[in-house]
Picture: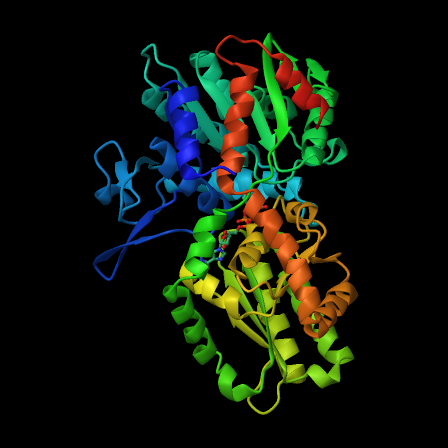
Length: 510
Ligand code: GDG
Protein backbone atom coordinates (compact mmCIF):
# COMPACT_ATOMS: atom_id res chain seq x y z
CA UNK A 1 0.00 0.00 0.00
CA UNK A 2 1.31 3.47 -0.81
CA UNK A 3 1.79 6.19 1.77
CA UNK A 4 2.63 9.90 1.55
CA UNK A 5 6.29 8.90 2.11
CA UNK A 6 6.41 6.31 -0.70
CA UNK A 7 4.66 8.72 -3.06
CA UNK A 8 7.15 11.48 -2.17
CA UNK A 9 10.03 9.11 -2.82
CA UNK A 10 8.58 8.08 -6.16
CA UNK A 11 8.24 11.72 -7.18
CA UNK A 12 11.79 12.52 -6.08
CA UNK A 13 13.42 9.53 -7.74
CA UNK A 14 11.38 8.59 -10.81
CA UNK A 15 10.29 12.11 -11.59
CA UNK A 16 13.99 12.97 -11.60
CA UNK A 17 13.53 16.33 -9.97
CA UNK A 18 10.81 17.35 -12.45
CA UNK A 19 8.50 20.11 -11.32
CA UNK A 20 5.10 18.81 -10.27
CA UNK A 21 2.32 21.08 -11.52
CA UNK A 22 -1.35 20.27 -10.87
CA UNK A 23 -4.20 22.12 -12.58
CA UNK A 24 -7.88 22.25 -11.64
CA UNK A 25 -10.70 24.75 -11.73
CA UNK A 26 -11.57 24.45 -8.04
CA UNK A 27 -8.96 25.60 -5.54
CA UNK A 28 -8.29 23.61 -2.38
CA UNK A 29 -8.30 26.64 -0.03
CA UNK A 30 -10.58 29.65 -0.41
CA UNK A 31 -10.07 32.93 1.42
CA UNK A 32 -13.22 34.99 1.97
CA UNK A 33 -13.98 38.23 3.71
CA UNK A 34 -16.96 37.91 6.02
CA UNK A 35 -17.98 40.94 8.15
CA UNK A 36 -14.54 42.43 7.70
CA UNK A 37 -12.77 39.23 8.85
CA UNK A 38 -10.79 36.96 6.53
CA UNK A 39 -11.61 33.26 6.82
CA UNK A 40 -10.13 30.27 5.02
CA UNK A 41 -12.36 27.35 4.00
CA UNK A 42 -12.01 24.07 2.12
CA UNK A 43 -14.66 23.55 -0.55
CA UNK A 44 -16.79 20.38 -0.60
CA UNK A 45 -16.10 18.16 -3.57
CA UNK A 46 -14.40 14.95 -4.49
CA UNK A 47 -11.59 16.39 -6.57
CA UNK A 48 -10.08 18.75 -4.03
CA UNK A 49 -10.51 16.18 -1.26
CA UNK A 50 -8.52 13.68 -3.33
CA UNK A 51 -5.78 15.98 -4.65
CA UNK A 52 -4.82 17.86 -1.51
CA UNK A 53 -2.96 14.94 0.16
CA UNK A 54 -1.13 14.24 -3.11
CA UNK A 55 0.01 17.84 -3.38
CA UNK A 56 1.18 17.77 0.24
CA UNK A 57 3.34 14.79 -0.68
CA UNK A 58 4.63 16.33 -3.93
CA UNK A 59 5.46 19.82 -2.67
CA UNK A 60 4.64 21.20 -6.12
CA UNK A 61 2.45 23.98 -7.49
CA UNK A 62 -1.34 23.72 -7.84
CA UNK A 63 -2.82 26.17 -10.36
CA UNK A 64 -6.53 26.87 -9.84
CA UNK A 65 -9.18 29.54 -10.23
CA UNK A 66 -9.15 31.98 -7.31
CA UNK A 67 -12.83 32.11 -6.36
CA UNK A 68 -12.80 33.68 -2.88
CA UNK A 69 -13.52 37.33 -2.11
CA UNK A 70 -10.20 37.64 -0.22
CA UNK A 71 -8.15 35.39 -2.52
CA UNK A 72 -6.25 38.20 -4.23
CA UNK A 73 -5.28 40.05 -1.05
CA UNK A 74 -4.05 36.90 0.72
CA UNK A 75 -1.79 35.83 -2.17
CA UNK A 76 1.29 37.58 -3.58
CA UNK A 77 1.26 39.72 -6.73
CA UNK A 78 1.41 36.68 -9.01
CA UNK A 79 -1.37 34.86 -7.11
CA UNK A 80 0.91 32.50 -5.18
CA UNK A 81 0.24 31.44 -1.62
CA UNK A 82 1.78 28.67 0.51
CA UNK A 83 -0.78 26.10 1.69
CA UNK A 84 -2.20 24.36 3.74
CA UNK A 85 -2.36 27.54 5.86
CA UNK A 86 -1.70 25.67 9.11
CA UNK A 87 1.36 23.79 7.77
CA UNK A 88 2.45 24.94 4.31
CA UNK A 89 3.84 22.20 2.09
CA UNK A 90 3.00 23.27 -1.46
CA UNK A 91 2.17 26.38 -3.50
CA UNK A 92 -1.30 27.34 -4.63
CA UNK A 93 -1.25 29.66 -7.62
CA UNK A 94 -4.56 31.42 -8.06
CA UNK A 95 -5.74 32.53 -11.46
CA UNK A 96 -8.12 35.46 -11.28
CA UNK A 97 -10.66 35.46 -14.08
CA UNK A 98 -13.23 38.06 -15.02
CA UNK A 99 -16.69 36.98 -13.69
CA UNK A 100 -18.47 36.87 -17.04
CA UNK A 101 -15.72 34.85 -18.66
CA UNK A 102 -15.66 32.39 -15.77
CA UNK A 103 -19.44 32.13 -15.72
CA UNK A 104 -19.55 31.14 -19.43
CA UNK A 105 -16.65 28.73 -19.03
CA UNK A 106 -17.82 27.12 -15.78
CA UNK A 107 -21.63 27.34 -15.55
CA UNK A 108 -21.94 27.44 -19.33
CA UNK A 109 -19.77 24.99 -21.22
CA UNK A 110 -18.35 22.86 -18.38
CA UNK A 111 -21.37 22.40 -16.11
CA UNK A 112 -24.22 23.23 -18.48
CA UNK A 113 -22.72 21.28 -21.41
CA UNK A 114 -20.09 18.66 -20.60
CA UNK A 115 -21.42 17.60 -17.16
CA UNK A 116 -24.91 16.56 -18.39
CA UNK A 117 -23.41 15.17 -21.61
CA UNK A 118 -21.21 12.78 -19.61
CA UNK A 119 -23.80 11.70 -17.01
CA UNK A 120 -26.91 9.71 -17.82
CA UNK A 121 -29.28 11.64 -15.58
CA UNK A 122 -31.68 12.74 -18.31
CA UNK A 123 -30.85 16.43 -18.02
CA UNK A 124 -30.12 17.81 -21.45
CA UNK A 125 -26.82 19.56 -22.13
CA UNK A 126 -26.78 23.07 -23.55
CA UNK A 127 -24.02 24.18 -25.91
CA UNK A 128 -23.80 27.92 -26.54
CA UNK A 129 -21.12 29.11 -28.96
CA UNK A 130 -20.13 31.96 -26.65
CA UNK A 131 -19.60 29.51 -23.78
CA UNK A 132 -17.33 27.46 -26.02
CA UNK A 133 -15.33 30.59 -26.89
CA UNK A 134 -14.95 31.35 -23.18
CA UNK A 135 -13.97 27.72 -22.49
CA UNK A 136 -11.19 28.04 -25.06
CA UNK A 137 -10.12 31.39 -23.63
CA UNK A 138 -9.91 30.09 -20.04
CA UNK A 139 -7.96 27.00 -21.17
CA UNK A 140 -5.55 29.41 -22.86
CA UNK A 141 -5.16 31.52 -19.70
CA UNK A 142 -4.32 28.37 -17.73
CA UNK A 143 -1.91 27.23 -20.45
CA UNK A 144 0.00 30.51 -20.08
CA UNK A 145 0.25 30.02 -16.32
CA UNK A 146 1.40 26.39 -16.62
CA UNK A 147 4.07 27.29 -19.16
CA UNK A 148 5.31 30.05 -16.90
CA UNK A 149 5.50 27.68 -13.90
CA UNK A 150 7.24 25.00 -15.98
CA UNK A 151 9.85 27.50 -17.18
CA UNK A 152 12.09 26.90 -20.18
CA UNK A 153 15.06 25.37 -18.38
CA UNK A 154 16.38 21.89 -19.20
CA UNK A 155 14.68 20.12 -16.28
CA UNK A 156 11.41 18.34 -17.16
CA UNK A 157 8.04 19.32 -15.74
CA UNK A 158 5.11 17.03 -15.09
CA UNK A 159 1.66 18.57 -15.50
CA UNK A 160 -1.27 16.77 -13.91
CA UNK A 161 -4.56 18.20 -15.18
CA UNK A 162 -7.85 17.55 -13.41
CA UNK A 163 -11.20 17.06 -15.04
CA UNK A 164 -13.51 18.19 -17.79
CA UNK A 165 -12.84 21.91 -17.40
CA UNK A 166 -9.57 21.59 -19.27
CA UNK A 167 -10.05 19.32 -22.27
CA UNK A 168 -8.17 21.70 -24.57
CA UNK A 169 -5.27 22.42 -22.24
CA UNK A 170 -3.12 19.32 -23.01
CA UNK A 171 -2.84 20.11 -26.71
CA UNK A 172 -2.22 23.81 -26.00
CA UNK A 173 0.67 22.83 -23.72
CA UNK A 174 2.19 20.25 -26.04
CA UNK A 175 2.07 22.61 -29.02
CA UNK A 176 4.07 25.20 -27.13
CA UNK A 177 6.38 22.94 -25.10
CA UNK A 178 6.63 19.34 -26.41
CA UNK A 179 9.03 18.41 -23.60
CA UNK A 180 6.30 18.67 -20.98
CA UNK A 181 4.94 15.41 -19.60
CA UNK A 182 1.19 15.80 -19.47
CA UNK A 183 -1.41 13.57 -17.81
CA UNK A 184 -5.08 14.21 -17.15
CA UNK A 185 -7.65 12.57 -14.97
CA UNK A 186 -11.30 12.82 -16.02
CA UNK A 187 -13.27 12.58 -12.75
CA UNK A 188 -16.65 11.96 -14.35
CA UNK A 189 -17.89 9.22 -16.70
CA UNK A 190 -17.17 9.33 -20.44
CA UNK A 191 -20.41 8.80 -22.41
CA UNK A 192 -20.87 6.22 -25.14
CA UNK A 193 -20.12 7.40 -28.66
CA UNK A 194 -23.84 7.78 -29.49
CA UNK A 195 -24.38 10.25 -26.64
CA UNK A 196 -21.20 12.14 -27.54
CA UNK A 197 -22.60 12.81 -31.01
CA UNK A 198 -24.52 15.74 -29.49
CA UNK A 199 -21.31 17.67 -28.77
CA UNK A 200 -20.87 20.36 -31.45
CA UNK A 201 -17.08 20.76 -31.34
CA UNK A 202 -16.08 17.11 -31.24
CA UNK A 203 -12.86 17.22 -33.18
CA UNK A 204 -11.36 20.13 -31.26
CA UNK A 205 -12.25 18.65 -27.87
CA UNK A 206 -10.90 15.17 -28.67
CA UNK A 207 -7.77 16.55 -30.27
CA UNK A 208 -7.21 18.63 -27.13
CA UNK A 209 -7.40 15.53 -24.92
CA UNK A 210 -5.02 13.63 -27.18
CA UNK A 211 -2.34 16.16 -26.27
CA UNK A 212 -2.01 14.05 -23.08
CA UNK A 213 0.62 11.36 -22.66
CA UNK A 214 -1.79 9.64 -20.32
CA UNK A 215 -5.53 10.07 -19.91
CA UNK A 216 -7.16 8.41 -16.91
CA UNK A 217 -10.78 7.53 -16.11
CA UNK A 218 -12.26 5.77 -13.08
CA UNK A 219 -13.45 2.70 -14.99
CA UNK A 220 -12.33 0.54 -17.88
CA UNK A 221 -15.79 1.04 -19.36
CA UNK A 222 -15.20 4.81 -19.58
CA UNK A 223 -11.85 4.14 -21.30
CA UNK A 224 -13.55 1.94 -23.88
CA UNK A 225 -16.23 4.57 -24.47
CA UNK A 226 -13.50 7.15 -25.01
CA UNK A 227 -11.54 4.98 -27.47
CA UNK A 228 -14.71 4.27 -29.46
CA UNK A 229 -15.61 7.96 -29.50
CA UNK A 230 -12.16 8.86 -30.83
CA UNK A 231 -12.29 6.08 -33.40
CA UNK A 232 -15.61 7.36 -34.70
CA UNK A 233 -14.65 11.03 -34.85
CA UNK A 234 -10.93 11.58 -35.55
CA UNK A 235 -8.26 10.68 -38.07
CA UNK A 236 -5.91 8.63 -35.90
CA UNK A 237 -4.88 5.11 -34.97
CA UNK A 238 -6.87 3.66 -32.09
CA UNK A 239 -5.39 0.51 -30.54
CA UNK A 240 -8.21 -1.00 -28.49
CA UNK A 241 -6.04 -3.86 -27.22
CA UNK A 242 -3.19 -1.65 -26.06
CA UNK A 243 -5.60 1.01 -24.83
CA UNK A 244 -3.84 3.81 -26.66
CA UNK A 245 -4.31 6.28 -29.49
CA UNK A 246 -1.64 7.48 -31.90
CA UNK A 247 -2.25 10.83 -33.57
CA UNK A 248 0.27 12.92 -35.48
CA UNK A 249 3.15 10.85 -34.09
CA UNK A 250 2.13 11.30 -30.45
CA UNK A 251 0.77 8.49 -28.28
CA UNK A 252 -1.87 8.82 -25.57
CA UNK A 253 -2.29 5.95 -23.13
CA UNK A 254 -5.89 5.59 -21.91
CA UNK A 255 -6.20 3.79 -18.58
CA UNK A 256 -8.58 3.19 -15.65
CA UNK A 257 -7.47 4.46 -12.23
CA UNK A 258 -10.30 4.11 -9.69
CA UNK A 259 -9.88 6.99 -7.26
CA UNK A 260 -10.03 6.63 -3.49
CA UNK A 261 -9.62 8.55 -0.25
CA UNK A 262 -6.87 9.09 2.30
CA UNK A 263 -8.12 6.03 4.15
CA UNK A 264 -5.64 6.08 7.06
CA UNK A 265 -6.08 9.78 7.72
CA UNK A 266 -9.83 9.27 7.67
CA UNK A 267 -9.61 6.37 10.14
CA UNK A 268 -7.29 8.37 12.37
CA UNK A 269 -9.89 11.14 12.67
CA UNK A 270 -12.64 8.56 13.19
CA UNK A 271 -10.74 7.07 16.13
CA UNK A 272 -9.90 10.43 17.70
CA UNK A 273 -11.54 12.28 20.54
CA UNK A 274 -12.49 15.03 18.13
CA UNK A 275 -14.76 12.63 16.24
CA UNK A 276 -16.26 11.42 19.54
CA UNK A 277 -17.08 15.01 20.43
CA UNK A 278 -18.70 15.56 17.05
CA UNK A 279 -20.74 12.39 17.43
CA UNK A 280 -21.95 13.63 20.79
CA UNK A 281 -22.81 16.99 19.20
CA UNK A 282 -24.95 15.28 16.55
CA UNK A 283 -26.67 13.12 19.16
CA UNK A 284 -27.67 16.24 21.00
CA UNK A 285 -28.50 18.26 17.89
CA UNK A 286 -30.83 15.51 16.68
CA UNK A 287 -32.17 14.94 20.20
CA UNK A 288 -31.59 11.22 19.76
CA UNK A 289 -31.55 10.37 23.47
CA UNK A 290 -35.10 11.48 24.09
CA UNK A 291 -36.71 10.86 20.75
CA UNK A 292 -37.11 7.08 20.69
CA UNK A 293 -35.38 6.96 17.32
CA UNK A 294 -33.51 3.68 17.02
CA UNK A 295 -32.02 3.96 13.53
CA UNK A 296 -30.26 6.88 11.95
CA UNK A 297 -29.70 7.06 8.20
CA UNK A 298 -27.51 9.57 6.43
CA UNK A 299 -27.02 11.05 2.96
CA UNK A 300 -24.24 13.54 2.18
CA UNK A 301 -23.95 15.15 -1.25
CA UNK A 302 -23.38 18.27 -3.24
CA UNK A 303 -26.87 19.29 -4.36
CA UNK A 304 -26.62 17.92 -7.88
CA UNK A 305 -29.21 16.24 -10.09
CA UNK A 306 -26.84 13.32 -10.69
CA UNK A 307 -26.91 12.40 -6.98
CA UNK A 308 -30.55 11.21 -6.92
CA UNK A 309 -31.51 13.07 -3.72
CA UNK A 310 -35.30 13.31 -4.38
CA UNK A 311 -35.38 9.62 -5.38
CA UNK A 312 -33.73 8.68 -2.09
CA UNK A 313 -36.24 10.70 -0.06
CA UNK A 314 -39.12 9.08 -1.95
CA UNK A 315 -37.51 5.70 -1.28
CA UNK A 316 -37.62 6.52 2.44
CA UNK A 317 -41.25 7.61 2.06
CA UNK A 318 -42.17 4.25 0.50
CA UNK A 319 -40.26 2.42 3.22
CA UNK A 320 -42.33 4.22 5.88
CA UNK A 321 -45.51 3.42 3.99
CA UNK A 322 -44.66 -0.27 3.73
CA UNK A 323 -43.16 -0.68 7.21
CA UNK A 324 -45.48 1.08 9.68
CA UNK A 325 -43.67 -0.45 12.68
CA UNK A 326 -40.63 1.67 11.84
CA UNK A 327 -42.45 5.02 11.84
CA UNK A 328 -40.95 7.26 14.52
CA UNK A 329 -38.09 4.76 14.87
CA UNK A 330 -36.06 5.80 11.82
CA UNK A 331 -34.61 9.25 11.19
CA UNK A 332 -32.84 10.30 8.03
CA UNK A 333 -30.32 13.17 7.98
CA UNK A 334 -29.66 14.63 4.54
CA UNK A 335 -26.79 17.07 4.15
CA UNK A 336 -26.92 18.95 0.86
CA UNK A 337 -24.09 21.32 0.03
CA UNK A 338 -25.24 24.09 -2.33
CA UNK A 339 -23.52 23.73 -5.69
CA UNK A 340 -23.65 25.53 -9.08
CA UNK A 341 -26.57 27.64 -7.95
CA UNK A 342 -26.22 29.91 -10.98
CA UNK A 343 -27.60 27.16 -13.23
CA UNK A 344 -31.39 26.84 -13.71
CA UNK A 345 -31.52 23.04 -13.29
CA UNK A 346 -29.80 23.33 -9.91
CA UNK A 347 -32.27 25.96 -8.71
CA UNK A 348 -35.13 23.69 -9.80
CA UNK A 349 -33.53 20.76 -7.97
CA UNK A 350 -33.26 22.78 -4.76
CA UNK A 351 -36.97 23.57 -4.98
CA UNK A 352 -37.77 19.92 -5.70
CA UNK A 353 -35.80 18.77 -2.64
CA UNK A 354 -37.60 21.28 -0.41
CA UNK A 355 -40.97 20.11 -1.71
CA UNK A 356 -40.07 16.45 -1.26
CA UNK A 357 -38.80 16.98 2.31
CA UNK A 358 -41.99 18.86 3.14
CA UNK A 359 -44.20 16.22 1.50
CA UNK A 360 -42.59 13.28 3.29
CA UNK A 361 -42.39 15.04 6.65
CA UNK A 362 -46.00 16.18 6.44
CA UNK A 363 -47.09 12.69 5.61
CA UNK A 364 -45.45 10.91 8.52
CA UNK A 365 -44.47 13.35 11.32
CA UNK A 366 -45.92 12.60 14.77
CA UNK A 367 -45.28 13.77 18.32
CA UNK A 368 -42.18 15.79 17.64
CA UNK A 369 -40.67 13.17 15.27
CA UNK A 370 -40.07 14.00 11.61
CA UNK A 371 -38.50 11.40 9.35
CA UNK A 372 -36.18 13.77 7.44
CA UNK A 373 -33.82 16.38 8.85
CA UNK A 374 -32.40 18.37 5.96
CA UNK A 375 -29.37 20.68 6.24
CA UNK A 376 -28.65 22.82 3.21
CA UNK A 377 -25.11 23.74 4.22
CA UNK A 378 -21.65 22.27 4.47
CA UNK A 379 -20.00 20.78 7.56
CA UNK A 380 -16.31 20.23 8.21
CA UNK A 381 -14.73 16.80 7.81
CA UNK A 382 -14.65 16.08 11.55
CA UNK A 383 -18.37 16.78 11.78
CA UNK A 384 -19.07 14.53 8.79
CA UNK A 385 -17.05 11.70 10.33
CA UNK A 386 -18.83 12.21 13.67
CA UNK A 387 -22.11 11.74 11.81
CA UNK A 388 -20.91 8.66 9.87
CA UNK A 389 -20.07 7.05 13.19
CA UNK A 390 -23.57 7.60 14.48
CA UNK A 391 -25.45 6.51 11.35
CA UNK A 392 -26.74 2.93 11.13
CA UNK A 393 -26.95 3.22 7.39
CA UNK A 394 -25.70 5.54 4.66
CA UNK A 395 -27.60 6.00 1.40
CA UNK A 396 -25.86 6.87 -1.89
CA UNK A 397 -28.35 6.85 -4.75
CA UNK A 398 -26.51 8.65 -7.55
CA UNK A 399 -28.23 8.27 -10.91
CA UNK A 400 -24.74 8.24 -12.38
CA UNK A 401 -21.43 8.94 -10.62
CA UNK A 402 -17.84 8.49 -11.80
CA UNK A 403 -16.80 7.07 -8.42
CA UNK A 404 -18.49 8.59 -5.31
CA UNK A 405 -16.21 9.18 -2.39
CA UNK A 406 -18.94 9.54 0.24
CA UNK A 407 -19.51 5.77 0.08
CA UNK A 408 -15.82 5.11 0.75
CA UNK A 409 -15.70 7.71 3.53
CA UNK A 410 -18.64 6.13 5.36
CA UNK A 411 -16.92 2.74 5.24
CA UNK A 412 -13.63 4.23 6.48
CA UNK A 413 -15.39 5.78 9.50
CA UNK A 414 -17.03 2.52 10.63
CA UNK A 415 -14.25 1.38 12.92
CA UNK A 416 -16.55 -1.00 14.81
CA UNK A 417 -17.41 -2.88 11.58
CA UNK A 418 -21.13 -2.18 11.86
CA UNK A 419 -23.39 -0.05 9.67
CA UNK A 420 -24.93 -0.67 6.26
CA UNK A 421 -24.11 1.04 2.99
CA UNK A 422 -26.91 1.36 0.44
CA UNK A 423 -25.22 2.12 -2.85
CA UNK A 424 -26.34 2.90 -6.39
CA UNK A 425 -25.20 0.39 -8.99
CA UNK A 426 -24.43 3.33 -11.25
CA UNK A 427 -21.47 4.61 -9.23
CA UNK A 428 -17.86 3.63 -9.83
CA UNK A 429 -17.72 2.68 -6.11
CA UNK A 430 -20.21 -0.12 -6.70
CA UNK A 431 -17.52 -1.96 -8.69
CA UNK A 432 -15.42 -2.21 -5.53
CA UNK A 433 -17.87 -2.23 -2.63
CA UNK A 434 -19.63 -5.48 -3.47
CA UNK A 435 -20.91 -5.91 0.07
CA UNK A 436 -23.02 -2.79 -0.02
CA UNK A 437 -26.75 -3.22 -0.65
CA UNK A 438 -26.69 -2.36 -4.34
CA UNK A 439 -29.75 -0.63 -5.80
CA UNK A 440 -31.00 0.80 -9.06
CA UNK A 441 -31.53 4.42 -7.94
CA UNK A 442 -34.29 4.99 -10.51
CA UNK A 443 -36.32 2.25 -8.81
CA UNK A 444 -37.71 3.80 -5.64
CA UNK A 445 -39.04 0.38 -4.61
CA UNK A 446 -35.49 -0.99 -4.49
CA UNK A 447 -34.37 1.90 -2.27
CA UNK A 448 -37.31 1.27 0.12
CA UNK A 449 -36.51 -2.42 0.21
CA UNK A 450 -32.82 -1.75 0.90
CA UNK A 451 -33.69 0.53 3.83
CA UNK A 452 -35.95 -2.22 5.19
CA UNK A 453 -33.10 -4.72 4.84
CA UNK A 454 -30.63 -2.32 6.48
CA UNK A 455 -32.71 -1.72 9.62
CA UNK A 456 -33.37 -5.45 10.03
CA UNK A 457 -29.84 -6.66 9.27
CA UNK A 458 -28.24 -8.77 12.01
CA UNK A 459 -25.00 -7.60 13.60
CA UNK A 460 -23.24 -10.67 12.25
CA UNK A 461 -24.20 -9.83 8.67
CA UNK A 462 -23.29 -6.17 9.13
CA UNK A 463 -19.89 -7.23 10.44
CA UNK A 464 -19.29 -9.59 7.57
CA UNK A 465 -20.21 -7.04 4.90
CA UNK A 466 -18.48 -4.08 6.56
CA UNK A 467 -15.27 -6.02 7.15
CA UNK A 468 -15.10 -6.93 3.48
CA UNK A 469 -15.73 -3.34 2.42
CA UNK A 470 -13.20 -2.01 4.89
CA UNK A 471 -10.62 -4.46 3.63
CA UNK A 472 -11.17 -3.28 0.07
CA UNK A 473 -11.08 0.39 1.19
CA UNK A 474 -7.80 -0.08 3.03
CA UNK A 475 -6.22 -1.77 0.02
CA UNK A 476 -6.72 1.12 -2.38
CA UNK A 477 -6.01 4.54 -0.96
CA UNK A 478 -5.51 7.87 -2.70
CA UNK A 479 -1.70 7.45 -2.71
CA UNK A 480 -2.09 4.17 -4.62
CA UNK A 481 -4.17 6.04 -7.18
CA UNK A 482 -1.47 8.68 -7.69
CA UNK A 483 1.32 6.08 -7.59
CA UNK A 484 -0.37 4.00 -10.31
CA UNK A 485 -0.78 7.03 -12.53
CA UNK A 486 2.87 8.02 -12.11
CA UNK A 487 4.25 4.51 -12.57
CA UNK A 488 2.17 4.01 -15.72
CA UNK A 489 3.73 7.19 -17.06
CA UNK A 490 7.26 6.07 -16.13
CA UNK A 491 6.73 2.67 -17.71
CA UNK A 492 5.51 4.41 -20.82
CA UNK A 493 8.82 6.15 -20.60
CA UNK A 494 7.77 9.46 -21.91
CA UNK A 495 11.36 10.60 -21.61
CA UNK A 496 12.44 8.30 -24.45
CA UNK A 497 9.12 8.23 -26.30
CA UNK A 498 9.01 4.47 -26.16
CA UNK A 499 6.36 2.10 -24.96
CA UNK A 500 8.13 -0.70 -23.09
CA UNK A 501 7.09 -4.36 -22.84
CA UNK A 502 5.63 -3.92 -19.36
CA UNK A 503 3.23 -1.29 -20.64
CA UNK A 504 2.06 -3.62 -23.41
CA UNK A 505 1.56 -6.44 -20.90
CA UNK A 506 -0.27 -4.17 -18.51
CA UNK A 507 -2.67 -3.04 -21.27
CA UNK A 508 -3.38 -6.65 -22.19
CA UNK A 509 -4.37 -7.42 -18.61
CA UNK A 510 -6.92 -4.59 -18.43
C1 GDG B 1 -16.44 14.18 -8.59
C2 GDG B 1 -17.18 13.03 -9.30
C3 GDG B 1 -15.77 11.38 -8.06
C4 GDG B 1 -19.71 16.54 0.96
N1 GDG B 1 -20.35 17.38 1.80
C5 GDG B 1 -19.42 18.05 2.45
C6 GDG B 1 -18.17 17.63 2.00
N2 GDG B 1 -18.39 16.70 1.09
C7 GDG B 1 -17.31 15.97 0.43
C8 GDG B 1 -17.49 14.48 0.62
C9 GDG B 1 -16.63 13.93 -0.52
C10 GDG B 1 -16.84 14.99 -1.59
O1 GDG B 1 -17.33 16.17 -0.97
C11 GDG B 1 -17.87 14.57 -2.64
O2 GDG B 1 -17.25 13.63 -3.48
P1 GDG B 1 -18.06 12.72 -4.49
O3 GDG B 1 -17.12 11.71 -5.02
O4 GDG B 1 -19.21 12.12 -3.75
O5 GDG B 1 -18.68 13.65 -5.60
P2 GDG B 1 -18.31 14.90 -6.60
O6 GDG B 1 -18.13 16.16 -5.88
O7 GDG B 1 -19.40 14.89 -7.61
O8 GDG B 1 -16.91 14.48 -7.28
C12 GDG B 1 -17.21 11.78 -8.43
C13 GDG B 1 -14.99 12.57 -7.51
O9 GDG B 1 -15.06 13.71 -8.39
C14 GDG B 1 -13.51 12.23 -7.35
O10 GDG B 1 -12.98 11.81 -8.56
O11 GDG B 1 -15.83 10.40 -7.05
O12 GDG B 1 -17.81 10.71 -9.13
O13 GDG B 1 -18.53 13.43 -9.64
O14 GDG B 1 -15.29 13.89 -0.18
O15 GDG B 1 -17.07 14.10 1.90
N3 GDG B 1 -17.01 18.12 2.43
C15 GDG B 1 -17.08 19.09 3.39
N4 GDG B 1 -18.26 19.56 3.88
C16 GDG B 1 -19.44 19.06 3.45
O16 GDG B 1 -20.50 19.46 3.93
N5 GDG B 1 -15.92 19.59 3.86
